[in-house]
Image (cartoon, rainbow, N blue to C red; front, side, top):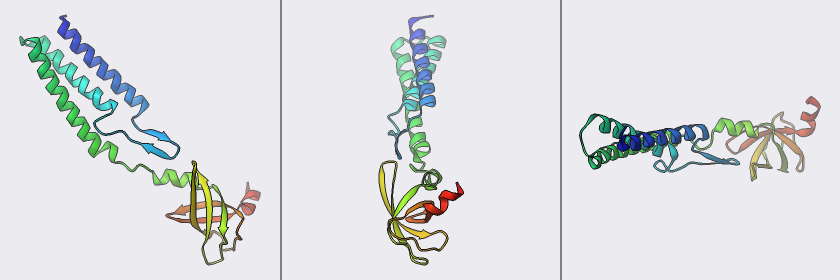
Length: 178
């Protein structure tokens, strides 16, 4: 094999390694309840795809054409650039557009969480609770799950929260059931 074939084969393998590494590691970073997403054009899958295309096209042109090395590199670079652009577009329009917070995941985190009533909850009137979740302090309106009034200062368990209204019941009534 010629040095050009080795060069393009190495680029192809490097692209595969980047792609597999990105597949196993992912591209999003999660810190607590915050998800950080990379820019669509600056991440490992995009660079991996560009190297795969560059290496594959360069290899094929080197093996099956009589073009000089600069022409082969130019054709391979154009293919890598096209793959880079296509992958960036794919990620920007499809993969990285999903919501940053999964409402079902958030609902599962909140359900069963302990909070404190800071404004009394009446039988038919809402009150207010406060709680800390993943290092963030929350203060939301709350209603009694069983329709009984709950005085301020009572520890409650959040059954569910829809928007900024939580359904709660006193911890003292939940604890015996456990």
